[in-house]
Image (tube, rainbow, N blue to C red; front, side, top):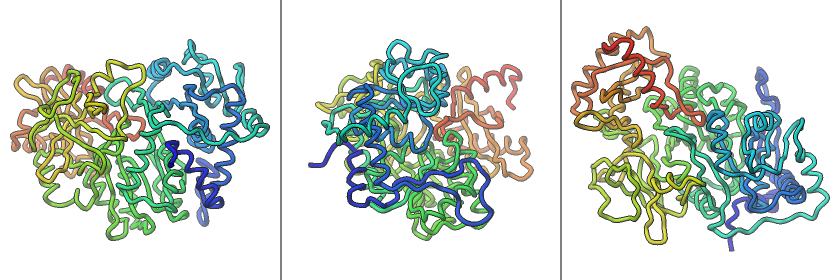
Length: 557
């Protein structure tokens, strides 16, 4: 019988293909690239990775950690991050993973909510933990990666030494419903929430990702969001970790990325829309080709058509950029490829205010669209479902769909609907189904702009204006029941004239029934975005900025 513990696949790979590359890590992070030859990297085989993981798992239990302990893991992407994460799963410790970029206030709240009994982190994380009181009421067990100063607990090398003195523990065999991890959302529409993942959720997620995108054992992946690499051993994939700051994908060095892609003959790559934008512009300017890639995945926000076209020219004929849709609570939900996204019919519908096509629901998942409501829905009814073409909230059901948030009962009530012995998740996203069964994304429910007599949906309106050649992206916000379009000019636009761009956009707005209420344009130098993908726009912050601008000058700018 197949194990529900996804890390068991790591040990199977160590047995069947011990010398195959498991993870390649930058050998000289941040250092200048050599002008010629190979970029310095450290290769770790599946045998080495499994051995290191088993040492740490055994050592954690020998050092006082126990199965079922919730432990905050605050270690940057590197060998320690991967071996600790795998070791947690191996011995049944529950990792609590939080993006450090969510801000100190949110970090303290999220750590407090998760009620961890343990904290394993680098020196800097421990200093912040003590000075800011992170997890003070509950954290009793400590581990340090690096230098330990004035706190107790074990150093990682001591944990490994303890593991070396014990008999290997083997792999914990959980039930499908056992809690495996608490993964916090990025908090793009409020305080981040701790998503409770079961081992069954994780197992199904990996299976659905592999099946949906045709990923096969022996492939080589370059995950520019490193936590995604945690799933690669389950699919039999090798991981090449890029030398970049994962919290700043919009500032990636394209040459550094491309050199490593070619060095390792990478077949699969994940990149946020902002990262692909930089890579695509560089590739277009330098006539770069990436012949080994079988697919490129992108998520976190819609990928602009301009970016899709640029990156597609770097790939072999027939190779697509696939844009899966989903969330921390449920991934994947739907997917579409660049070939279909760039079809005239799809592009014209989007430019006319149709939103962004996010594709058909993936196999083994049910997606419905229900009428918009900000209230909890206690029980599922088919009467909630709206007709084809009508905008509503996207709701999903499947084995990869998580059931609750940790210690956030109100948030759980608002996001989950009971359906017999199953749970449906409300995505918090607005959209509709077309006659072909495809989903179209129109914006976040929390971001809809409420006017005196109607509501506007952000992405649906923005898709009209984003077609402008001098526009990088737009964001619709509401200020005192007034629709305000914030505009970020394309940084590579030649001699853009704001007054001309504004006149164009106002005329476009007037030409569409959907957008004719938008009569205020504000230019913003660089939108505030999420830390995870640098792609989700923080519209709440933009709305405050826009209100300030309008109070300074009530006339449209």
